[in-house]
Image 1 (tube, rainbow, N blue to C red):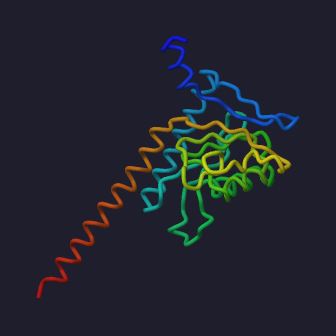
Image 2: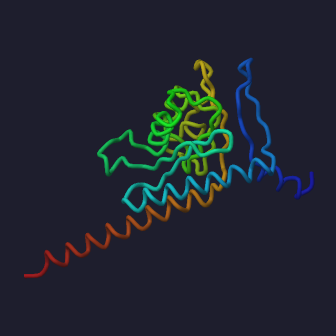
Image 3: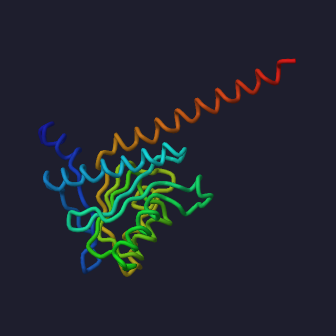
Length: 199
């Protein structure tokens, strides 16, 4: 195998779904679909910026159906003192009102960070067809990094998963936020120590 073939294999974006027999199916994304996914992921990243502007962890989500934006959401857990106010939950709740339905058949949810177990459960219950996420969450990811609840064999609905769309940019958005927050906390602590040491 040539190195060019290896490189193409390493960067190929795939969607993993479950067929009617319960078998996992992996299909490579077309360049056209990848461009569409990148477009909507950038919209989700803009939502993440809104979260960051409020001091929230910068995670954003958008729900799309038939090429149309249905709803958006971003993290609000800190502002709302609500551990369930994740970007995906905010987006799904807004979409339910727009669609006037608790089922979101034929929709795709784009989110900048791999969904947690709570958000994955909401996606299964709302019958979202496909989730596309950017950065892996190696601590609490429920779309395959830690556990895969979106395609659990015992569930009556399975969500197709496309991961890694603008992964580096989504990861950088998060890591830059945490780096800046650590620096701010360190500066505040230093300032408090200086004030405490003055007579």
